[in-house]
Length: 131
Image (cartoon, rainbow, N blue to C red; front, side, top):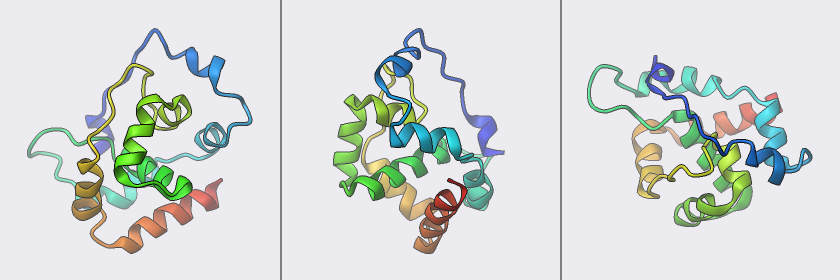
């Protein structure tokens, strides 16, 4: 399973999120209300589990695209903002000091994993439905 490839992020700075991101923050609420594990199920046929290096977590990649849709930003802008916007990092399940992806990874994710753009719409609609 693709989620077995993921690593647990342990950081001494995770408590910062509770200090700087208010409880009523939209991204905090989405993150707490929605179980994004459905992304694994929807995308599992688009990943090879026994060949090549580990993939960037599909949930994180999907969340980048969700942020892009919510805030109407370009790939480069969404990645740039995720470098310093703590609510973005929290939403992406990143440690505050963790490095962000390269914006070209979003293009590759869309082309290789979301071959059918209706799948992105399906995933976004499912997220809204769950929330």
